[in-house]
Image 1 (tube, rainbow, N blue to C red):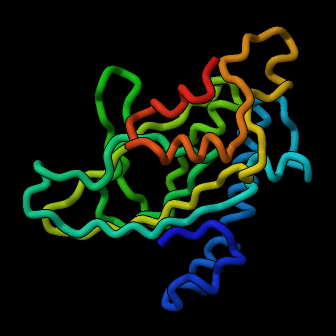
Image 2 (spheres, rainbow, N blue to C red; image 1 turned 180 degrees about the vertical axis):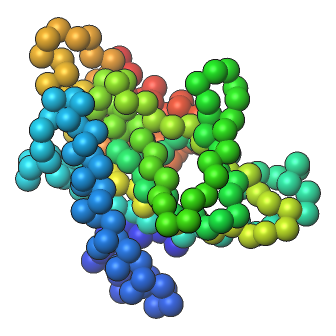
Length: 207
């Protein structure tokens, strides 16, 4: 199930509708607080009414179910990719299987689930806005031989009509812009027009 707009809630499966709405209501202020902390490192002091659509104009929730696979060596839950969001809040069960790429070569690090904790990924949109000061996290999912896995990522995205590009606060001292300004809906279309492949979709906005 994918949820993007709350006003589409009448289309959602009734078995999960109320729980998803409640989770989104709880997670929204948390996402805003996390973004405010990250933005202070970019000399952006608060998320006001003008910045809110740019940073968290839409939210999408996936409810993912990965069945057990008797031979995990011949299957993968989700291939390597980066999220296109500003940030992603990930709620996962205790099965494990999420891997993030390390900083040295092609090593992959397993993200051990911690009860009561969320995993937070930086996405491509924030990498673009931060002019590479923050880097999106390349990750993948491996299936388990005997246990199913359930994960609920909440993607905090710009609104479709937002124009994303490096913040002027970053460039005011002459720092070179690594990205052009692009309409988020155009980037969205580009991202989903191709098979996920690492950080390749960032090329759409690179100068």
